[in-house]
Each structure stands twice: as structure tokens, then as C-alpha cells.
Amino acid sequence: MKDLKERAVRGVLARVCAQAANVLLRVGSLAILARLLEPADFGLVGMVTAFTGVLNLFRDFGLSAASVQRARVTEEQKATLFWVNVLVGAILAATAAGLAPVVAGFYHEPRLYWVTILMASAFLFNAAGIQHSALLQRQMRFTTLSAIDTGSWIVSTGVAIGAAKAGFGYWALVAMTVALPLTATTAFWLATAWAPGMPHRRAGIRPLMRFGGTITVNGLIVYVSSNFEKVLLGRFWGAEAIGIYGRAYQLIRIPTDTLNGAVGEVAFSALSRLQDDPARLRSYFLKGYSLVLALTLPATVGCCVFAGDLIGVLLGPKWREAAPIFRLLTPTILVFAIANPLSWLLSAIGMVGRGVKMSLVIAPLMIASYLLGLPYGPQGVAIAYSTVMVLWLVPVTAWSVHGTVISLREIMTTVSRPLASSAVAGTVAFGVCSWCSQSHWVRLILGGTVLIGTYAGMLLFIMDQRAVYLDLYRRFARSSRVEEGAVVSA
Image (cartoon, rainbow, N blue to C red; front, side, top):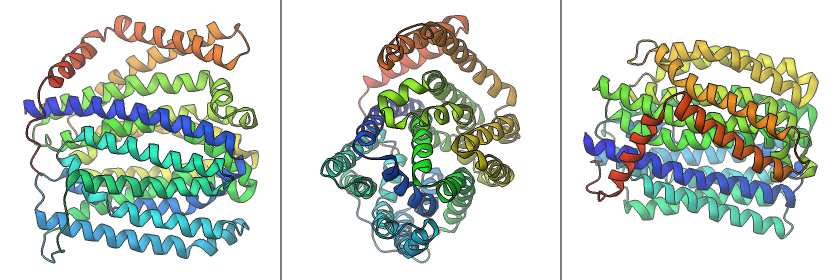
């Protein structure tokens, strides 16, 4: 158990460091590509992903999570799951390619035909690496996973920037979409050195399929409800509107998605091994949850305070219309930062059905909000979206933890400290920067320094959280001196 704790700490910090590097890569690539391409170029690709993106939810049918969550997976099950994933990937690629004339006709944009067909190949490339990635997760080889993630981003970003500079326009974004899974899957195969055998009819994968299927259904509902506004904006307001809205949405989600993904991957693997030990499960979850909130909440508040400056520095003057959308989406992202990690707990203890029920409740409300905001354009949609999500936060939190080892009071206590610290820090930073130079860079550097300093002071001293993060540092320092040792049995 001690080895698991040390691995979890090492894995979290490895993934956080790698995802921090990925944030820089994503933001850097977005900044460069935003200057090399036009909003309409992003909008064209966004139109396709609004349709085909839903197919991403079926790309592994939840089987990677299922194989990680199980205490033991046989070699026959792994091989059978691999071939199931490949079959699903081939079906999705064919389906996406078949949608090409539908997408082009829906948007009245002939260029989308070949864009859709080429982007369809990414499904097959991704499918071939799913079980290899899951194997690395079961072994808790998060340093290797981190290196692959970062390397794949570097390669795909380089391909996109090279294509954009060569004048290929929106095809640069298509190339990036295909290069990312191709590079990652190649690296997964090399890292695991695992060659799948033939599938077995009696491998006993039905429980895994049920678990994965439930996760997939939940993901489908969430995706449709979270992306339907992009379909509506593209259809009724055009490529430029969805390009601007999509980049604002993408940019403000980077801190939350990246950190949730980094810690969540480790947390799910560790919590799955503790599902029969409630006391340790509770302790591990609350510590991981506290860490994610401590990092994501101030970053999201900072995005709100410095929206105009961030858009000006990262995307350039031709994207200034994205700034108000960027700011209006902040409440939504705060809700995601607080609520999304609760899925680690539900998935680890096998309560994935509850996630489906919650999604079925919120989905109609979200879609209704888009329809109400649509006549007012991207900003109207952003306001309506954020309003619904804020109203949903307390009910979804209470529902998520009901009947588990975690209480609503513990969640609220854990959230309150970094949230209050972030609010105070954001207010102070805004006040300091309200009178300073008109330079975006000056405001970002000065304001960011003030925000981080105020936040750290509030969280560590006023909220008295020094012991929590000092303990985390000590565990990492100790684990970093310990050799890797044997991996967790796959």
C-alpha cells in the first residue's frame, strides 16, 4: 500500500509537470497558428468536429477505463479488447467518412467534404493504441505516458505550423488532428513492447463491456449537450462566429482540462485499487481533489480578470471579439473544475450508472439555454450556458457524493479554501492593474505576479493549508529518491 501511495504521488507530479509542458505547447501552438491562419480556418475544422467529435466518444467504448478499473485483466482479455477497439475504430472511421456529404450539405460548405474524410482516419490510428495506453496506466508508468503525450504534441504541432507557414490554410489543422493520434499510438507500442494475440470468444469481457458501455453512454450525453451550441452557431451565425467562440472556449478550458486530465488519470488508477478500503479511498480522493482545485481555480479566475490581455497576447488583435466570450465562459469552467473530478470517485467504485442519470437531467437544460441565447449570438450563448451551469453546481455535487465515503460538507470545505483565495487574489490583481499601462504584457506580468502572490498567501497562511502542501512536497522528495521498482501487476 505504501508503494501505491509513493507511486501515486510520483505519478501525479509527473503528470502535472508534463501537462504543464503541454499547456505551454497548446497555448504556444494556438498563438502561432492564430497568427498564421484566419478565424474562418478554425471555424471550418470546428464545423467538422462538432459533427464527428461525437464519434470520439465511441473510439474506445470505455474499454480503457474498464481495463484500468478491474483488479485483474488476463492476457486473453487484453488481446480481445485490443481487437474490439480496432473494430470500433474502423467502424467510426467509415462512419465519419460517410458523413462527409452530410456535413458539407448541412453547412452549405463544399470544402468540408474532404476535410471530413481525412480527419476520419484519426479514429483508426487512435484505436490501435488504446489498450497499450491502458497497460501503461495499469502499471502506473505515468512518466512514460507523460513523455509520450508531450512528444506527440510537439510532433503534431510542428506538422501544423509547418503546413500553415507553407500556405496550406485550414489543411494545417487537419494535419495536426491526424498526426497526434498516429504519433502517440506509435510511441505506445514501442513503450509497452506488447503485441496483442488473437481474440478469444470466451475471454470473459462482458463485464468490461458493460462498464465501458455505461461510460460511453454518459460521455455521449455530455458531449452532445456540451457541443450542441457549436453546431447551432455554425449553422446560424457562420464559420467566423464559431471560430471565435470555439477558440475562446478552447483557450479557457486548457488549465482545467489539462490539470484534471493529469491528476485524474493517476487518481482513477489509484482509487480503483482502493475501492475495498473506504478510509484510504476517502483520504486519497480528498487530497487529489484539493490539489486539482488549488491549481485550477486561480488559473480560471486569472483568465476572467485578464481576458482581454490574454486574447491580445495569445491570439492577436484580429481575435479581440473572443475576449468577452472568454470572460463570460469563466463561470462554466469554474463549475467544471469543481464538479468534474467527482467522476474519479464514481468511476473507481463502479457507480458509473449514476453519471448517466445526472447527465440525462442536465442535458435538456443546457440545450434549452443555448436556444435561448442563440438569437443574441456567441455572447448570448455564453451567458446562458454559464447561468445554467452555476445553478447546477450544488445539486450535481450533492448527487455525486450521496451514498459514498465522501460527504457534501467535506466537498464544500475543500472547495471553499481555494475558491475564496482565488476570489480575493483576482480582486486584488484587478485593482492593481486597473490603473497601470495599456500594454497587455505589462498587465499580465504585473497582474499575474500579484494574483499568484496573493493567492499563495491566502491559501497557505490565511486558510492555513501549509501542512497539506508541505506533506505533498515531502512525499515527492522521498519518492524521487526511491528507485522505480517493480510495476503494479497488469
